[in-house]
Image: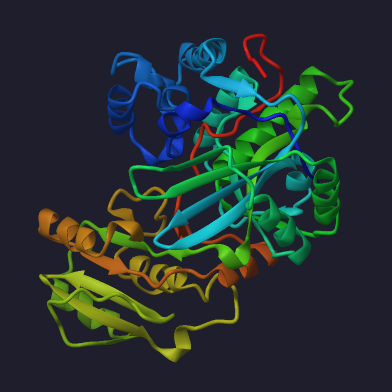
Length: 420
């Protein structure tokens, strides 16, 4: 049994939605975020990354930065840029990219479901990143970035969402990256009751993306519980903003690896050692995009190679059987000495959405090293890992399209500035 409940969404005025909606806060570095806000002063990044409103040398983790985020949200509520729905509702958020649409239900998940592992994880989180978003959530008394959750499709819920999607949306716009964003409100009392009941019958929900945002929302809620020991469990801080998609609709892109050096080996010597675990193709100039599980594209020394994992490398273990695990356990760790890819400065990760050319350019610019093009992790693999209570290696999945922040906000405390 899981709890997904409706909420009074804080959302942009219709004519401002496309300008306010922004990619997640962690997509950008500080310089990139500031440039976005300078080019578009309405961008929600000025709230999600309020250091963009300070000098470049200002401490981005100063309390004054979080206070500015809260004040900016209050100011935009006061001038009508944001409104709040009068009644608790669910919402639908559909994203269309490249002719493919994924349709999510927007509601609030329970921090107790997270703590009791009914909301399952597949990644570790870093405490420093959690602390930043926990302070952001706590200072604003709001969650501004939704958690990307997945569940096994339920036909009755699909029918409800399909019927609502036949009505006029609240928002319908295409962002600069050619992704179409549509939002509908589910205000029918009957539909709200049916949706809540449907999720009561769902045993597990899975975090697809947003592990740090989820952990931060939970910590902020637990902090409020400590501050209000007479809490009942019904308070809004016990729930966090989520968009839930049927797992069958989601698409995972490859998450590729670039290493800056070969641990003092020449490329030819490195390639010879790789042959102990992989069948290695002849060199070619055309980029190698893996076409099946167990195949890895390798770029180095000006050429591409196709690597096929030998049968003895495959495992029944849901983590060790992942292609990213095979690469880590057979190549990156023992050959290149990259034992902890989370902290080793010699490796970086490149989302598949950037294309294979970005991998070759990164290696050529450095003049050394190698790049690895991965076959994408599947949703079935993700669910198997989560169901086993295990964790994937860092950067195993890259989801597209990205959810926009600022389209729907969940506030714990009603602001005096918000109109309905």
